[in-house]
Length: 244
Image (cartoon, rainbow, N blue to C red; front, side, top):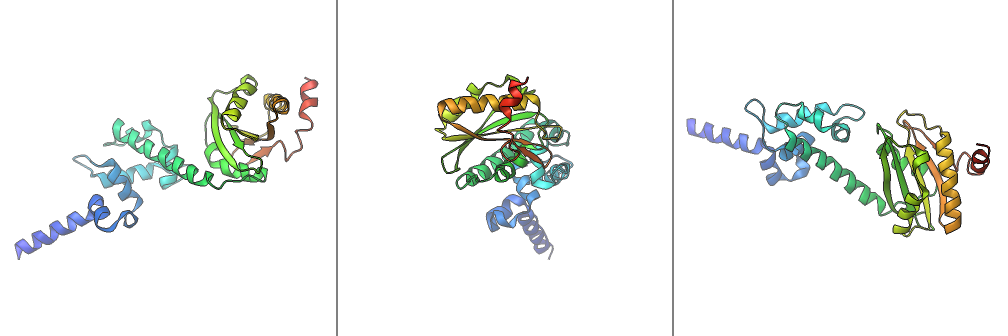
């Protein structure tokens, strides 16, 4: 009877382990914490890998909870959890980056931009939470199909220092017919600055000369955006620059 109880106890312990559950029932049977526990792999003398995974998910609470919040957690924050060292923290950050890239790669297969609102919605979550300015050039074909996008600058960005040359080098590389320029305002207010207006005008002028049209310049704020095309500011950028 004692042996049977021990055997049953061992059976329960094994099937409760995330790795063994994965092998027996597949990944869809696992919770988010259990999937993370497999990545974390080992725990400490006080906490097993599953308990560590739950602590990681609990840390991801703002601005997104759970798995979606992992992208906003820094390596330093992860390492603040006892049992999560540098190696585990790097693995977890790589996991979130891979997830983002897989999602974007899947989405890009059928992305077609018709309106400024579509463009803003596509890049909103990628840009709205950043603490520094990030500039993206989206290359599109004649039908608005997204060919590729590339981050050309990130950090303490002064829009007036960004050269149209950098932007159109990316457009040439992607064999773009048209381009869309995007950047974020960490303050959350997407109102264009004077530098934003000057850059937009310069890029439009260069685009006209080389036959690659700037379709729009979209500034992302905190869950809001401003589109130069929607606001009909394309027609006044030259006047604004001339009066400077």
